[in-house]
Length: 464
Image (cartoon, rainbow, N blue to C red; front, side, top):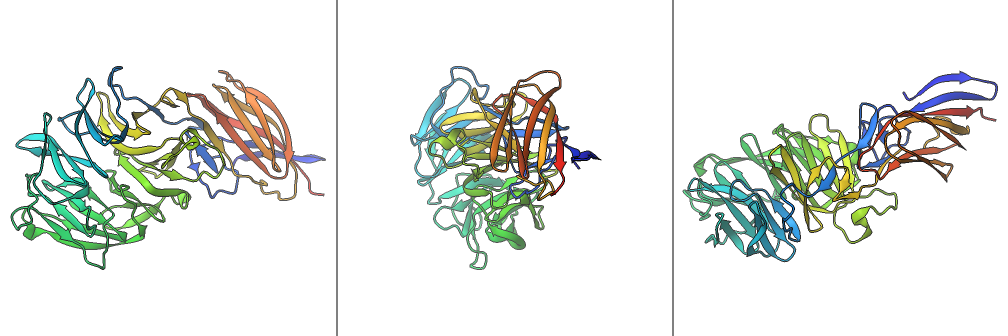
């Protein structure tokens, strides 16, 4: 508990509110003041009793002279180039280490996959016109009528959902990404019956490819000969799977449905992060997993009438949600309209690369947005603290904050704000705010900050 040291006097009961955790993140359904959970928080994380900045959004370390196209899709293939980007101008660019260069045009929604051809990796491009291949030097068209999306490599074949009939998953010939001819020895397709319905997304985990539908999951066992193909339907709870939301986190698949986030371990699914139910809209969602974290770019309703960065104009997504795949804890970035996510292997570690409003960037530790300050908020629910008719007075605040911050208190609907200068030592702030229902916020625009264990002294006046 975060109330302690209660003492009954002639006029009031004294107590303390100590925020000594911050680790629980955001729970929009919260109706109590909690030391660990916020009713609203973004661009922050809690650890060891301290509130800190979370991720930043910055240009990748690729050189100062790099030209960035108006990117809407990014992908990081093996060997053939470092980055491929689909621009808003309808053209595809590759970056090999010096600058982006145009290789071809595309139509409709584009997706990419890399695959070994004749011992060398190549880039496969899928759009409304069909399939093309880039070998690092030139682009050629694959002779096929197959048109697919959400392509993935599995069992030495390319698999993808049909663009024209999403009850079908097409696949190529083993070890030959150019051959999509439907025959017993070459490529073909798996057609799901009416009982399963549409396939919204696919994902690979361990030794199977999984198809995700409307509250249903099917496992595809795909040996090299097609005679060994077998489809097994698996019971799954949840609603309609959101496209582009399925990602492999190593120990299973995480995905978004119309009723929330789920984790699938190969045999069944379980609901996770229930505190975010009803908070996420996945219409334009995209996801990626770096092994320990599942990232989902999506649209969220923060319900506070603020406009943060991208929200000041037209946008599709406004948040990046990060789910730790070990304990399912959640962190949220706000104000970024990310349209694509990919894993980029830089020289030091795997980085999460993204396309955001025409910019290509990566998740950094800067706590800023391409050099701009990111607003950061940790706000409690509005609560009577268990005394529905008693007036409470917040007397003083004791805290350590290394950067300038605003402490905001809403008391019975009346706002109060206190500016606190950053110092390297603890300090005392006189508050003197009274009310029956209180809400507390810690806010800052500093790119790197730390607020350590803020504690309010409080008097609770007896009823009557």
